[in-house]
Length: 233
Image (cartoon, rainbow, N blue to C red; front, side):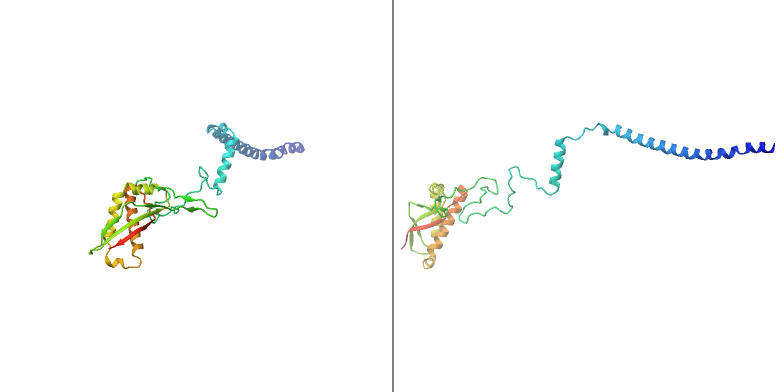
């Protein structure tokens, strides 16, 4: 009877390992359920935001993105005509004898003030500009300052521009004659004995004529003044 009573007592010891495995299984089930819930939440969010509705990028879009990438690595955008930007300091100064800047625009009003083109002479070695002359018809007669002497001169002008310079001179001959006479009236007896008198007088006449033509025609163009007759008596 004692041996029979000991047999049932061994049953609880056999059930102990089975009970210890249940908490581990519950933990694993809970972790798996949590992972499933998180994954489902993420997938649902992506569906709501339309992530899965976006079409795949086309070949043109991929090429365009590659082009933008090339610009980002230092490629400079080309001008619409492939031209380089103009130099900010590339404008040429005005000609010393009345020629305007090469761009031909007046700085104040944007008016086209470019002069006529220079005449070129064909040469086998290098291009040369052709000089043309124009004789003013009438003599210039003026008294010297504070003197009884009289000066009588004839002048001819020279230019490398076209006939428009001479046309402007003939057009404004009356005003130009007045300017030249004003210059002659400032001559004194002391000026006559200076070695460079005639050269200096020609420069003054040239500059005065160009200044007037620039006001009237926006261009001078007279490069030299020559005396074809010069008498003081």
